Length: 446
Image (tube, rainbow, N blue to C red; front, side, top):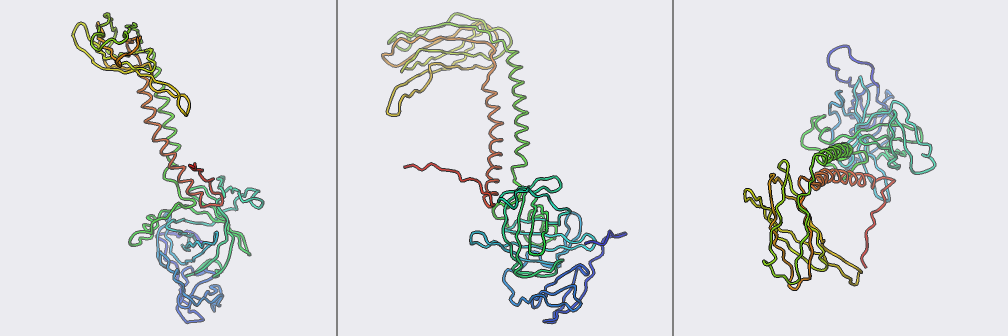
């Protein structure tokens, strides 16, 4: 651990102690002098006791494996959370799950005043790791079931997975007595972007806390050339790009919905909803197009310029009617032409009863000035049609509800998309855990 803060100026570089490997004679530099417990010879890869003045050989490791190639070279210096650290050690570890080996890298970082911290990397996913300040409180079910949680500093972490880990390669120096082949049981609990790890070996139980880092931030911190390896898949404590927006999105959605409701109530109270025309008409059986054309009585649209709602209700039954409308201002001659069709069909087939269409219709004509108006109506239907009765109701200044529906839909769709993305991300995360989500059942067509 550190020896205290410097009195002034920038921290000096760590003191380096030069030694020689007792096996191959290669020079060995202890960069964390006084703190290293074991060190790996860069020449013969023997693991040496750094606390022994004679560097007693703890383990011989003759073969240099291909995976001993850290992405960040030993001796590289960088700044983590505002503090300068140097990479002094590296180990490669692996676990076997369902017959498949998974390997990851762990880096030992050292600062003479701040002590040690660690970086881990798996498939392009990085974590900044420190030793826990106190022992987390475990869910009492840890030893009795496969599911549990842990509480650390008031934050609850969900159990993600438990697996055996084995050290396969080592380089540099370590603040513990490292061994190739050393085994431990690692249990991870997550609360993204943090991961709480419990590591149990034959000698001890240790806890560490990791926080997810993006490769680009690691490269920037250590001023590394090129680009970091691309992250593959979803890592256990990787923050979801959508999860932080889900609560905010739904909170904003609720706020806008409340605002829309207020607008709806306000406009509904302010609307006149006056019935200017309410009349029934008949299209006689077989009456040809053109001969049935007529105009209604004159009616008055009062008040400010606003919309006009025209509702048509018919008795069509397995038939249709088309009405050519023209709303005409008696004083100015200005006209608004539009057409509406009502059709309703129903029956039975092999799947049972069915129906389609509607016998009723409503249309809104916006921004109609006040004045005296009449409707020109030209009805038409199929040849040989039965008698069709239709009622026409004209209302003045009616709130258009579908505008609010469109607004609600415009707010709802982004919220659903963001939530769906977040759920998909979490599903991908937990599919790699000891608690994978239930599979989505798909219908099989026979």
